[in-house]
Image 1 (cartoon, one colour):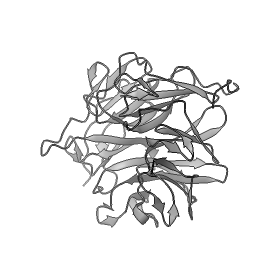
Image 2 (tube, helix red, strand yellow; image 1 turned 45 degrees about the vertical axis):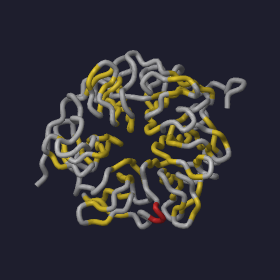
Image 3 (cartoon, one colour; image 1 turned 120 degrees about the vertical axis):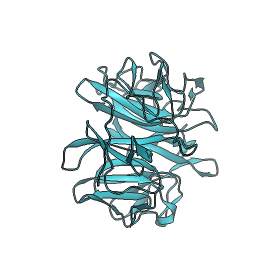
Image 4 (cartoon, helix red, strand yellow; image 1 turned 120 degrees about the horizontal axis):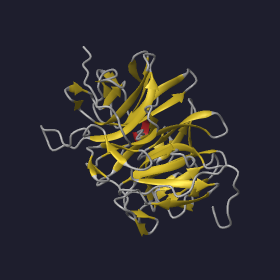
Length: 362
């Protein structure tokens, strides 16, 4: 029997960590949130409108957003923070394990649109989640059987058989079904993909993107090989084959990690943005965040974090009336070489599609 719990009504916006505004390809990071950032890592960002205007939903490890308590979940409406009914509740009473919200996504499985959310989530108000929940605006339920390990990523992707929901993480099973690292929601159940778990491939970040050769699934994580293809931390799957994105995302002497992927148009057309823990994108120095245009990598200013610092764990586009901007969250405390407030930042300029790159911008 499917049990459910009521989730408090959303009245504001969620907790965030940083944001990027790109005008053509010239952008600048800023940490000027009205009431500060959050006290711990941001692991997911998602733009939503629940009928009261756009908000940016945040999830992660934090317990405070701005000046209010917000356990693992909060929102930002462009001017102020709001909690989500007090949040998810800190640690589990049975053991010192913190709840973590890693991802969220709006999806209609045929029964109406709902917010799906994944993470290190065993239950919510008595509802057994198995690391994945579904909120229809009135109650929380578990879609399908529970996963054995946290769900790190959710994405909508058309693999040729129609748009479907895909989940990624370090999990190996959903109920009695073996689903190694990546799973697809189909006909009311989770099923494995043929390549799941191959050569240690995980799916801690997922994005659907058309790089000019058709829609493909891009997979980020902590791996160096995907089905025999050398691919440092990120790989493209076209439904049949894997291919690398140049030399991938690396740190000196090893592959890096990718924790977030997002598609964003900076005025020059849609591109794939990657966040994580790395120092190079291909051969280009890039501090934890980089842009892939389908053929080459580029850096975003001085990046986020400091050498040997923390990672970028979330990326999302949001528009609060000044133009679309790319927001980012993580555990970093610096923008380039400058300290950020509680690991938070926001855009300083809107996207201008018609603008030409200024001199010196890259």
